[in-house]
Image (cartoon, rainbow, N blue to C red; front, side, top):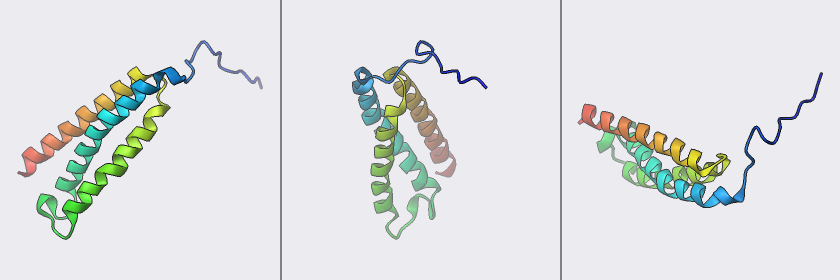
Length: 106
């Protein structure tokens, strides 16, 4: 068995110079993703969009933990460009799914 370590040149190291880009991606795109996912739950959750019994309040408070999770996990990306690309793609998929659900169920 050989214990080969990956060379430091093959993978870029995590650096603090990418934190502003990652943080801004998490703030902006993470918020959009949280809105889209909360909207999907509002349409697809129990009772549909008109579900009563505190569902509106639950949907409102659902945004915060999703947004915080996106903002926390965004620092696992190697570069800020990757964070922007992946979160941007996730936003496109989530808002596309929300648009499809709204147009089918309305």
